[in-house]
Amino acid sequence: MDNKMQLAVIFGGSGFIGSHFSQYLLDNSIVDQVVVADICPLERNRITERYASYIDQGKIAFESIDVRNEITLKLTGDIRLMANFAAIHREPGHEPNEYFETNLLGAENVCNWSSLVACENIIFTSSIAPYGPSEEARDEQSLPVPATAYGGSKLAAEKIHQTWQATDANKRKLVIVRPGVVFGAGEGGNVTRLIKATVKRYFFYMGNKNTRKAGTYVKELCNAMWWALSEKGGQSPVLFNMSMNPGPTIEEYVNTLCEVAEIKRFVPNVPFSIMYAASLVIEPITKLAGIEQPISPVRMRKLVKSNNIIPQYLADNSYKYLYTFKQALTDWRLDNKKDWGE
Image (cartoon, rainbow, N blue to C red; front, side, top):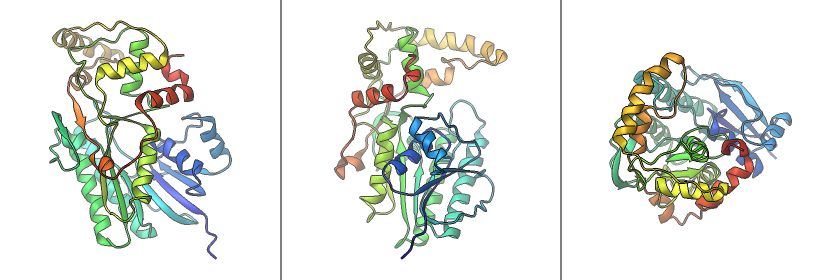
């Protein structure tokens, strides 16, 4: 009888999604230990007390790995699953070459190491960025037309993973997920900023009430990734969009978060041209001061463009969502009230 420890190795596992997925795998007894391979150290307070307890128990272990370099990691145990979440992704914030350097070299090195250790299951988080900006609905059959270095690098990284799977198609299983904005405890990104701006009364509509933004709760994403690998394991590779269906409008985001936070807010509608002009004036000043300001011109342009991404694969394969939008935000608030300014 094989009593080897069952391992999952998560590259980029110290981050927001990786932390939640580590806990998901252990909460559901999918593996015995999660090895977080990342350039950034573990944070005990990343999401929950239970996550910290897993670190204390040795069920979450850390290995310092830079995926841009050849991976020579040696582990004892049966590597049941590998996840590649390592990426340069924040926009704005990086030079174009940085996205390609990390996202392409990382994909190549992770896939090479997977072949070396004979791991036959990989989950790769891509992005909706390969679709490019469009007001039209996009599903998995839509032609990718990336408009940024980030989107282009993610699309190329998808192809690297697909090549890995095709090399031994009968044994290797690959899941590629293209999530919209991912929100939840410890996110610190767009939705967290929206919550704080709304609660503190400095959020304004810019003629974008009906702008649709594909998004998903991080716990829903974790569940869907494992579902795609295990329940749909006979199909490989699997590529799916991850979002609520349909993705909420900006107004729906605001109204629902106000309902969950139990607050009432009047949100003014200011012309985009005025807000954008203000951001152009403020941006160079805040850069000189070393301050990250919430109304950068890049973020302003993104806020008025829809990401109308349809999770058609999930719909076609009868995926059962765990959370409604309101339930997701309520669960998040229970997990981490600090994200809600409480």
